[in-house]
Length: 161
Image (cartoon, rainbow, N blue to C red; front, top):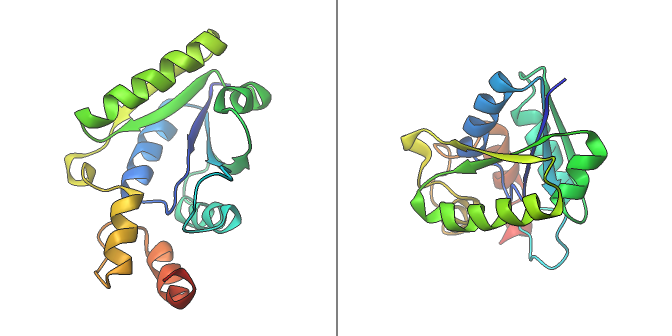
């Protein structure tokens, strides 16, 4: 079984993330979306909220699992038996950072490869940071996130502001 890990903060998950996942799910037998628990990052949503929102957003994909992890992505990939780390690229500006991550991971474990998938052009500008900015300034995020994410954010607006 070919397993890929799709790591990230997903704070919150966007339609761009889902687009990358859809492509990955067509290539690999199983894709594990792994929400990184980075205690040094000031997160918008808790890890458990992100995991649940992703689960709701990807429930139609039979070969997708959602999990969270602490520590290095490469160690998590080893733990779950993945041979591939799946990463998404939106624009050329993502490439340098992603290339550095890929090379560091390769130095840590040459058995695990990184594969980059590119989002559809209509999602190129969408980032979790952009979503948060639009949402916190009362903009409409419905074009950019799954419905369940928009609904959750609206229901929790007071807490998130």
